Image (cartoon, rainbow, N blue to C red):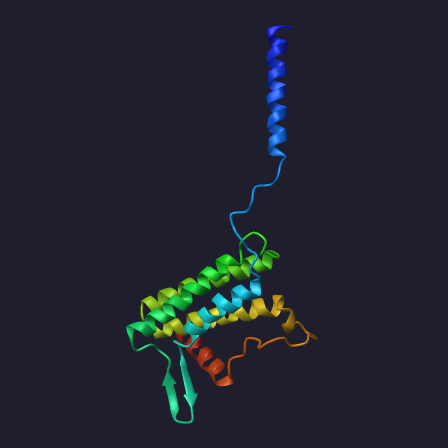
Length: 182
């Protein structure tokens, strides 16, 4: 057998060996996404969002209007921590196996952006900025839930407590506040 033929046989053999070994089992994922999305929502994103929302804006009660703005370092840190949970929760929605479609990707990225803006507002101890960030986060949550939470689809049977709508007085204050920022 000529030298050229021997090299060709060796090259063919190495190529075949490479192809056979690479056609084996797929590499395991770096991520374990066995936790259902609803559990990620229930244990991370929802508590984070509520921690932030409870630290921004104001509540009107019979006794008068009460600001929810934190008054202690612990309160500011709780708001910031909640915002971080939301931001990272958005990233978790983008892990392989969780992405559903392009709208899912857009909303997950928006949730991360909203969470990062909320964190920055809490770090700056800026109650007006927190109010706007909280409203943006809420709108993103509502849009995602309207499309992807089956219990919120038209004609579906309710399961659990859906994300509540803001009371009308809060919506009006948000609109007035945003109009004043223009």
